[in-house]
Each structure stands twice: as structure tokens, then as C-alpha cells.
Image 1 (cartoon, rainbow, N blue to C red):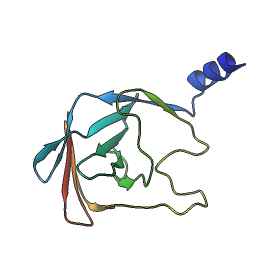
Image 2 (cartoon, rainbow, N blue to C red):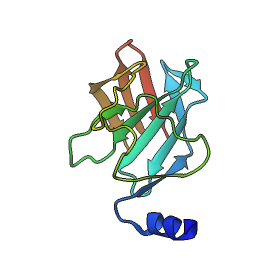
Image 3 (tube, rainbow, N blue to C red):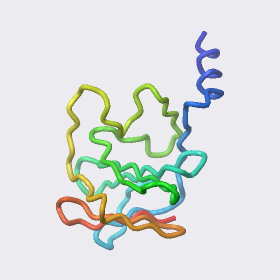
Length: 133
């Protein structure tokens, strides 16, 4: 039964795998032990900063044809090294469920800039966050 569920999850078109990206996370120009994950289509990036005692993860849309946006993932943090599967029923970093989301340092979406190998944005506390690969 478990094996069948795993096969379904792998083959389901509405599920996305996220894999660790070789890169670095900078906060105010300083390298941190943060980490990056991207989905297999490279349309979304999860940037996790670890400069504070509680990690903070942001979801960044990398599609240039659509409105680029950065969302705070609240209390969700992906595993540091392992790939993980995100389904469509209750994906992390979406706020359509009924539970209140706790933000530590929310992003300022209008400050998002992107290049071929980086994303950069500011947070409500004034910190400059950069993910580069």
C-alpha cells in the first residue's frame, strides 16, 4: 500500500518535487548557512535563511512571464539536504487554509529583483536577502 502511494505521488502531475540547489544565502551582504531548493521545472525557489535562531523560508516565483512574487512560508521550513514532495491539496507557503500564519520577518514583494543566477528582496525589518546560485 505504501509503495502504491509513493508511486502515485511521483507520477501525479499536480505534485512538485523540490531539490537542493547549490548556492548561498546572503543577509545584508553576509553569507549565512541558509539554503535553497527549486522545483524540477525551476519555476519556484524556496530560500531559507538561518541568520536568526528561528529559520525563515520564502517562496519566490521565478517565472518571468508572470507576475514575480515572494511569499513568506510562515512556520514551514524544508529539510536542509533532502528532496521533498509538495502536493496541491495543502502546499506550504499558501495561505488558503484556515489556520493563522505566523510571520517572523515578512518580505516586501515590491522590492524583488531577479537576475540569471540570483534573487534579491528586502524584508519588513529592512534586511536585504539574496539567494544566488
